[in-house]
Image (cartoon, rainbow, N blue to C red; front, side, top):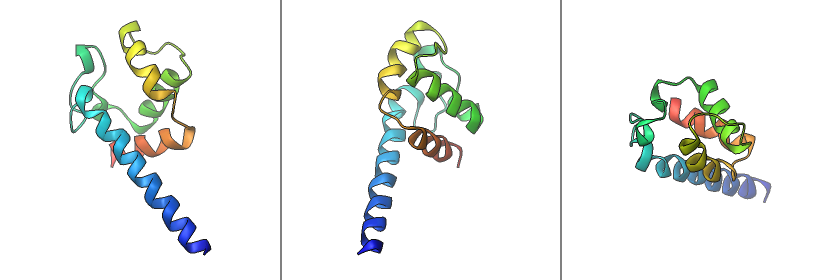
Length: 94
């Protein structure tokens, strides 16, 4: 029973992260090669730590980037836990 619960959790979490990174494609490109709204950094060129810092900053509304970027990113990042952010950054940089 324990193995089934762990497997289900892993599958659900993996698909959730995949969905989060796919949701980014509209603004950042399928391979994170675009500058969102012509204002953001190109995510594929950022380090994992920079991605984590940026997402946590948007989530915590620390004021990263242009106000237009904060307005677009804060609602997306608000729903993410630290573990979610780490996993998303790892997925982007793999």
